[in-house]
Image 1 (spheres, one colour):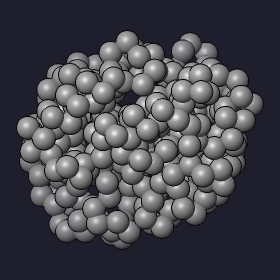
Image 2 (cartoon, rainbow, N blue to C red):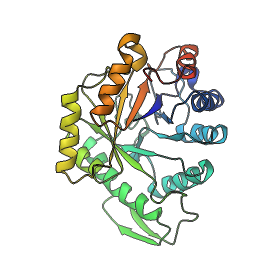
Image 3 (cartoon, helix red, strand yellow):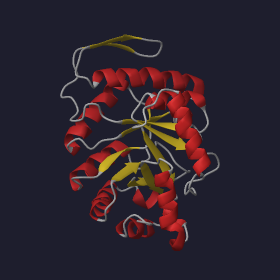
Length: 279
């Protein structure tokens, strides 16, 4: 099981330079990945860094860890622009990008405040259509697409990413079936369990077993990544190793360390520098 950081680049950590330095610290401390929330707004008045610009900075301060957005709401992006960003960042990082995708949420009015589509149903349609376009564009082939929301008649988008394919992880609010079916056709699933908050406790083995069984039923291969967020650093130090081992045995392939969106930046930096808690 790999260990990663799951960070909102908000408030004190809305500094791309500071987050890039933190990514370098994470790599040196033995973390395997560093993933950013991709948001336009947060709580009223809170500073927010643009995730893709910040990830480019991270790519230049690190050499081995995986990095990516967790998750980018595709309905807010033009698919062809996003395909360019994916290919460019994968090239810049030497093939280390993991692409988290999802529906997004209008809780902070990140869609409605700017006149973007606020209906979850319509955004779901846009997500599926956009995902198909992005994946086709990343092959480096010409793409013709005539859909309900997007029209494409394009020659090849080059250069292609280093990875073939770039791994896509689908965000899922468990137990919603439609996003689960979408994730089953990707390279990974990132389930968000009910009422877990920003610094969640670990999901139960029963929940993880149910997620994996549902993915298998939907045709997902056993190799599909199961990505879980959990604030291991908040667990009693005497129980951290057992918690990590339990999640590993339950089939979790990536365990992401979660933090509060306004958690003291110095505290976050100290936790990251200490390395993955629980071994």
